[in-house]
Image 1 (tube, helix red, strand yellow):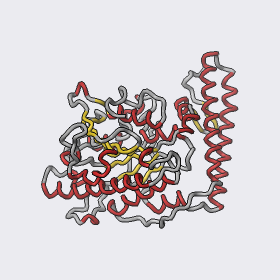
Image 2: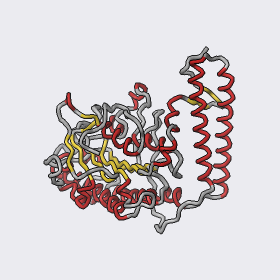
Image 3: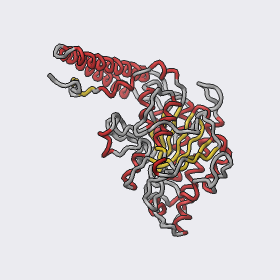
Image 4: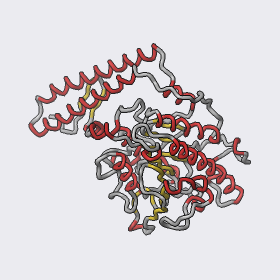
Length: 413
């Protein structure tokens, strides 16, 4: 007899127990109207320009952060949080998970990232369970260790959200839905035959598989509903793809704001590309990487701060937009109900350090207006995933652990 860890295989598709949580507590998920946005970059921020010198409510924003001054009371900057990882660039992909791909098999949910945890819980209640903007992003991962693809062409994102699909495209999607339904039918029939080989205890586990199958069927029905539902119309011109971060990043933010405003998604990420198209900053070298690895040479630090200032300008304008936009679902403003997490999986590109990652949270209805400083001593340090657990709970998930968390984070809520 096969062990209780066995998979049910139907038409080449595996169904495993971890998927159960995605479709548990769906009534609570349907009532949640929170939103989550994660903003990342591949090289961190210049520490002296990111972290305030003062702790608590009396902090002063460093020069790099001054574009955010109008939102000072709607944001919190965190010091001494990280994932206790090493490896420099090789650990950057763990920004939203705290777990390297190579270590994923040691954890119950692999290296699932926070955005995918929230998107899986929310399900297909929006047209896009999650939206990912940017070139070469590596911050979003499923529980199976699959990197979630991001889209770097703003025009394609606009088309997917706001342009109606052709009749041929709709027909192809309906066909795929039918094939997916056939796969689930095969899984169910094979499970019924499998049940006859099991004892009472294993039959209980099989009942959990049937629950998962029903959850997937519910997802298919919800996805099918979106096929024939018209897309929202917005008074925004279809954008053109730019040639670098300076052009594309503002477009990503604008599209993300439209996605939240039209309730096309409630989970989104944006990535400030680390590529070599920096000519539009007027810098001597066309390499973000070169400036991030400055070795404290003044001319390279100056160039890096131009790039990072642009990122902060874009983030500030995004927060401006959310604060100015009424929230049709909840009342108030979009920013009141949207958690915006900004940071990087690399703390300092020049030293390749992953210790003391730059982390900022804005909006979402938290009590903000402080520089939250956690203990610096190694034996008292707080995992960044403790903050992520707090964000997940605030989003609506009833969980007491997220990946490597040891609890939630004190003094923030």
